Length: 140
Ligand code: HEM
Image (cartoon, rainbow, N blue to C red; front, side, top):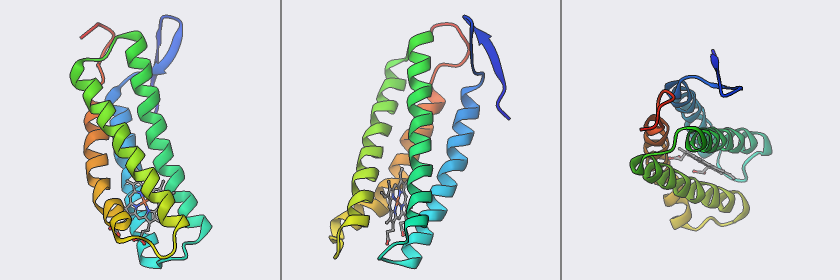
């Protein structure tokens, strides 16, 4: 349920909690598809990998748009900036190691270990960043 409200002539998502909830749901699907990929094992099918990476890209876009919009309209606190930068860095690790997993054979153990541990950090930073985006329309 995407509610919207008028803000300076633009329609935007009303509640940052909604973005946080959508991202949380998205992460559940990313984890489910990730465990599915690990269960199938390599060489990975194009379909399952596409589902997994498109879902993760969707969450990154949700974060980027949310942070950009909040920064332009209200401004981000130092804490929100720190969480956003941490989340984007975690995504870079996930996308880099994910691409290596699908391209390399044999897969280096360090790449696999990184892709199995970094998701938890990614979830923490992303949900913290989305929750830390300013709520309402007044500057923090
Ligand atoms: C935020 C982004 C991502 C998250 C949170 C994530 C999360 C996960 C998780 C939780 C697993 C299961 C690991 C395990 O068995 O413990 C997994 C596996 C996997 N992911 Fe991702 N992933 C992300 C992005 C990507 C991307 C962009 C790609 C490809 C381009 C990718 C490719 C894979 C592959 C191939 C596996 C199977 C690894 C194996 O055989 O164990 N992931 N991912």
